[in-house]
Structures are given as C-alpha cells and as structure tokens.
Length: 429
Image (tube, rainbow, N blue to C red; front, top):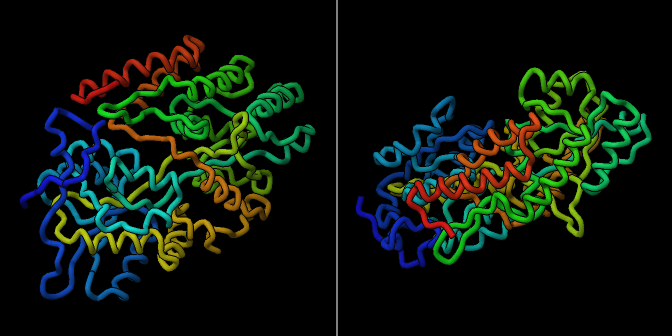
C-alpha cells in the first residue's frame, strides 16, 4: 500500500536523518467500507476482551471484530508482522514500547480521528500516546501507585502511616527500633518499575524531547532526589534487599518482615494471591509525597495501536475508543478483566469502587483512582526504555551489594542510555 507523508510537523526528536520529516506516514487509502461489514482483527491479552468484543459485534453489525488472544511470545511477532504487512488491525501493547515502533514507522497516526477523545482519559495516559502533533494509540489501562501497608504492624508498634518520604524514613526507623527484623519496605534490584514510578511521581522522566533531539534524563535532579531517599533507607538497613517476584520475596512478605509495598493498582490482586494468609492485615494509603508536591506515581500500562497498513483506520479508532472509554465496555473490562482503566469514566465506575475483603473491606481503588488524577504528565517514554530499564537492574544489583551508590548507578546508566540512542542513529542533546 502506498504511503503518503503527513503535513504535520514531524516529531523532531525521533530524527534519524535530515530526511526524517518523512518519518511519520499515514495509510491514505482503504478507510471507506467495502460492500458488507468491515472486518477488523484484534490481538490482545487483557482478560475480558472476548466478552467486550462480542458485545461490540452485537451492537455494530457494520464493523465486526475478530479477537485473537496473545500468549507467550506473540507480542514479539508483532513488529515483524507489521513490517511484512500481515499485522492485525488493532494490537494491544505496552505504552513504553510506542516510541520504538514509531521511529520504525510501524504505527498509524490516528490524530485525524481523535477529536474530543483527550478529555476522556487521564492527562498522563493521553500524554503517553501523543508525540509531537500525532496520536499513536488509545490508552487502555494504567498503574497509579498507592502505599500498601501492614496496618496491624503499624498499629502494634504505634507508628503513624507516613504521608511524606521524610516521614517514611522516620517510620522505618521507628519500626526497626521496635523490631530489628522488620523492614518498612524492600529494595528489589530486578524490578525497575519500583524506581520509575517514584521518579515519575517526583515529576521526573528518563527521557525528554528537545527541539531536534532526544534528551536523556536518567540522572536528572528528580531522580537524584529519589536516590537520596533510597540511599538513606539502604544505608540505615530500613529496607530489605530482595528480588521481587521470587519465592524469597513472597516468603519475606508472608513472614511479616516487609511492612509496606509502594506499587501499582494492579499489585493488590497479586498480594492477595501470594499472601492469602495475611487477609485483613493490609490497608492502602496514598503514596508518600515529595516536599511541596501532591503527586502520585505511575508504572505505565497498555494501549491499543493501529499498525501501518491497516485499511480501516477510522473504524479501528471507533472500536478502540468504545472499548476503552464507554461505560459499557469499561464495566466489562473492570469486572471481568480486572484492569485499572485509563479513562476518567472508569475511575468512577461502580465496578471499580467495590470493597475489598482482603483489605478489611476498604474500597482501595478510591485511593488509586485519586492517584490516577494526580500523576504528573512530565514522563516521556523513549525508544531506549527497555535498555535503560535493564541497565538500571544491573546497576541496582551492585547497589544492593553495597558496591556502588544509587548516585553512581544513575551516572553510569545515564551514560549508557545516551550511547544506546546514538547507536540507534538518533540525535541526542
């Protein structure tokens, strides 16, 4: 299919060469329906999508969607399928992967069809799918953060639940003084999301966009402030060094040696699944705040993209917009899929705001829904996101072993992240 350069200003920071103004192309034909219903193929993994697709198909005879559930390495097949022209019309993917696909011209710019949609999603989630003047996905779910804490332990030792990071450090000291085997939290070198969410909360980002080049900000002031907090916690032995998702990690949680987990809205389900015996002993509070700020962290989520070469872009946007912002679809995805929605309407959906027996009947998603509205829009995903995350994990393993400090780790990863982008042929400030 012939592709036509758009007239919009190209996203300059993605420039590979001076000719990069031709980078963003849009499929210019095939949006009109042929005789009979338009047929769309959709690849995704979120639970509940089958039911949502069936509901759409019943109500929209002119646009019929065929759903394929992605498992295993199906996601790895998507880039090759797009390049070969054999990709489905709609694909669910991580928001962090968007820039890499955009610079390789794999995703359609759908901004022509998204007028009025921006207001239906949280500011941070819409920022995640918007680059330059283009829009390259519809947000689906997100991961705003909250402080899950052992309310029984805080009560037992007479320690107040912290509302700031300074108070968090002090609470850690009090818990440790009361029980030497108790840690206020954990440092997991293998889980970079715990770091990224806190940098995001502090209005930082690993990447930025200059006039004509990428910016790498892994070692910026916001990250250095986060490093100072974590270094104090580590130096004073207030946090347990243990890799997340391992049997050792869950053993520590179940043993009651970890008093808090500051993480995403999807983590409570995993906590209930892996630490069922602790039912009624956990509560959720807002994440501790940085000085002078009322912000929340975010881990990112999934989005629905329309690959280049899709013939029926307009209908694909209509479907994905309905899927991710209509009350009907949100009710299905929340109840059957357990997702935490990016749509503002989803934050008020009764299916989301139900008491959780595991958390003593608390409506924990009230905390996460409030957090979703307070996530800063400063975060920018870059094409080197996965590489930077892996480099941080390696550096943080050395931090955990007391070989280097957090500050030294950030400096090293800053340098490697700049090199990674340059190795891709990208301009870097």
